[in-house]
Amino acid sequence: RIVYKLTDLGYAKALDKQSLQASLVGTVEYIAPDLIYCDRYNNSVDYWSMGVIAFEIVTGVRPFIPHSPITKWMLHVQQKKSADIAITEDNRDNYIYHSEIFPENHISNGLRKELERWLVLALEWNPKQRGFVPHAGVAKVEGKAAATAPQPAPVSMVLKIFSQLDQLLERKFLTLFSLYDCRRVSVEVTAETTMATVRQEVYLATGIPVEEIEFILPLEQKRTRIEVDTRPLDLWLPAVQDDRPMLYVVHAGNAGAIVQRDLKPRIPTSITDVFQNIKVKLKPHMLRQFIANAYYFIATEQRQYVLLLDGIRNYGLLLNDGIARRREEIVQMNKIVYGILGGVEYHKLIVSHTRDSPILNKQIPKGDFEAACREWEETCTRCETNVRKLAEMADKISKRYESVLKRSRDALRHPLLVTRADTEQQTTDFFGLKSVEGRYEQSRARILERITNEKTHMDMAQAVYECLKRRDVLLRDPTFLELQQQLLDIRTEMQEIEKVLQKVVELTEKFKRDLAHQALRQQDGVWKLFHMTSSVANGVTSVGKMAASLPGLDRMMTSPSISNGGPKFLLGGPITPLHAALSSEGGAIDENLLCFGEGSDVNDLISANETLIVTTNDLLCDSFTMLKGT
Image 1 (cartoon, one colour):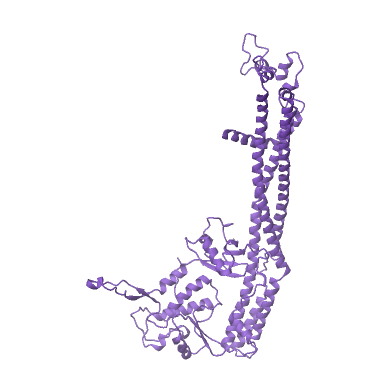
Image 2 (cartoon, rainbow, N blue to C red; image 1 turned 120 degrees about the horizontal axis):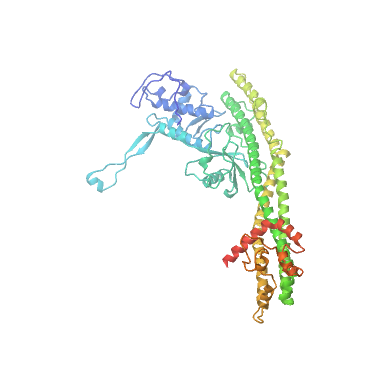
């Protein structure tokens, strides 16, 4: 926990609310009014001084007409309402009372609103109420009065200036910067705050629809992306330098540009009022305030443009990271698609061998067998056509993916996004801020030396005009617009690739199931044809006849070294090869009795098996799964 301490104790004296003091000490610009108009005062005068110092820290100026003499200052401060925290004087001697902190400040909007509530306590005119808030207690009523009319609770004053300041400094505000309209947004976050709440606050501030809000993480964030369970509190950073945001906001629904076209500058009234009466000589206090506000405005425009470039660069990094993460998915898709294509080729080869099998041609009626083979071939051809189209889609996706990945990397090397650092490690001076700073110091020197006239403010007014022109040139720069369009095209194309990729993944699963079903139907069809054509003749079926023509396993495995009286098969003993067993009968080898892989097409089959072994395993697994299900 941070502990804040006072350092200037030259006139310090321990006082409480009951203690009174009569000496007039302290800096006049910061003393409370009761030090002047009252004979006695207590420690509440320090609350006023705290409020004045806090206001000046935030805005750079004291809250109540700091240029006026003490008598005029007292007159107008006495007339202010409790909600007023500042008073200014315009060029026509009109006094304006403010209930808000000046727009020229260096704090977030969320903190500004909370600080305004605290300043109302600190800058209260009445010393008895200063720093206190009313608190309604509980009225204790006894006797018969308790059963009759309710009694109003007594109101007491509770000191809140310190506890409220502690609470204010302990609050955490998530700061965001919208690339769409160059607007800063701040949201107070707690452990209960959700991302939906942050989106709603962004919508209220920028007008971007909630469903079209996209958050971009700057490099200062430790995490790489926002997950579903990410809390806004996890994105809060304890120390952010140079007013840098903790999150960037992109209007994902705007396909035309990242930055809103023809984005108008938000010029404060303190500058527009002077521009509307540019030939009118400004009084010293107005001149001093104008040149300070003009410098603040130009510096703010510089910071906003730098944040724009930084936000666009982070957006490009996010796109590139998302595209790179898809590489493994693209590679896996190609493996699966071409695996299925290999499975189709393998199934096609099986159908071809089935059609050319002499045994099946002998055992199954020719008409039924040819009709079944035609059906299998037509089904296989349709499947092959669909899978080849799927493979073409996969090839196109791969080529488009490589193209968009290359373009996303090229976008990050765009001249506007390349990190520029001079010997002092400072950012590029897009608005000539160093020159403006010199003109600002010259104007201040003239005011101090009282060398002013009706044209003294023209130099800083010219600087503001040049800033606005420069801003318009930068935002309309073809290179800047080209960079935005390049990133948007990359985003759009990657979204299309993701849609097609999802469709291809769905089709691959469908075709895998279809191919497994085809293999099962083809095998089942062969056995059905056998059953349909089987006839029992002399106690032996046609299938039995076919089996009888095959050599017996006992005869194939009989060892010539074992006597006729011994076992025909000895575990671990020598085994007679198939060719030797068949040749021992003295006849030629019938190719119809050979297993697949021992015939004349052995080279083709081995080549097909080597190419399609992965797919075959998948198909077999799917087939067994379906068989178990049935």
